[in-house]
Length: 266
Image (cartoon, rainbow, N blue to C red):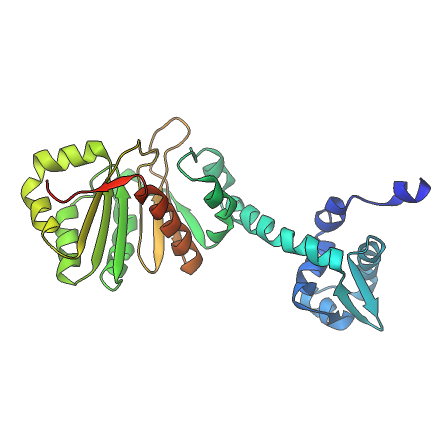
């Protein structure tokens, strides 16, 4: 009983101390000597040894000579730590943004992999610069083999952008809401008819309610515009870069596509 009282919960052991947490993370790829850990953590032996002792007492690490490595329990704990820290890292980018978003449009499996959005920034442009955030994105569109757009709204000069992409033999995948499809049929029938006849244009209508304004991605990055919890677009965008973010957004696209119908005539 007395021994149990002095033992910390493993959750506290792993996360309550930044030094202990970093030791576990540094050891995840294999054993390391103490001098290496001291250099990696920019600390001294007297400061680190008490934390190493706690990790050993809780069977997360072992040491021989002056070399430390994870135990089997330690490896299990670290394997679960990394995805959690990845998720926390994404939310820490702007917790006010994430806390105010309506995330119901994201399926549970993708919420569980939200840590893949690890190179993102939240952009809030002035109303007069609302679409300037897309400028660099549009440049990358031209060199990307595929471009994907899922939207409830029309981007300014959308038709000229699509036309330019199709002329560059870029596969353009376009999922629209039913309301937007009705608008396109009424106001842009000629343009959409021309696009549909192009082999590089792939259009679908989503059969459910879109609970976001839009998202788009290419081979380089993704741009997501989610409503806030009041169901309002508040001029905030999430711009992400890197393959993991693109892969995550492609999974979101595939999820939407399953409830979409191909548009072959307008």
